[in-house]
Length: 190
Image (cartoon, rainbow, N blue to C red; front, side, top):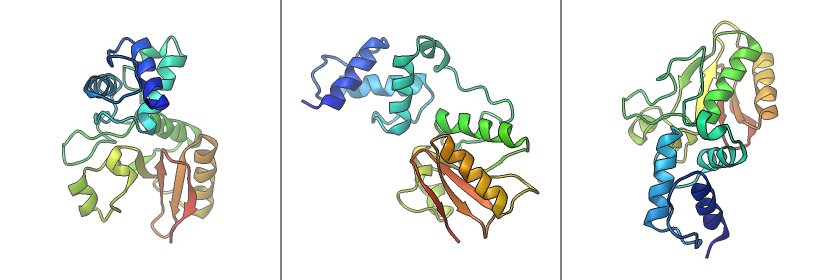
């Protein structure tokens, strides 16, 4: 029996999903319930509980309004619904946590934020020269920049804002963009 799987099953049950018996065993019914939850919350549907799915489960469990609000995509007043998706049309999308962060970043600076790379399926990731374990592959990363405003000071300010929001960041000063990801990080790549 795995305590984390048991927590997932208890959380899914509390949210109205049917993972089967709460026994700490990751079976077909648990995986199916996770996939249904991921579909309802507009997450990558893979049946696995990564950071984005874990965060969504926690939010839904801890907020009575989350059961209604989280099932609807985050309201992005400055971004189109497809702006974060893989450009090949496969449907892979960036997780809601990062979309919300992008909107917060844009609101904080007050400048248009260009998403230069969002979610990337394996063929697109290879074509873009992405690393094999890229967070873009799971919809847990995006790259962005403020046109006409990028310099090292702005990038540092963007990094500080990201870290303050619990978002990982890699700065690319030679290419004038920042990579933001779910996993905590704060580094510079030249």
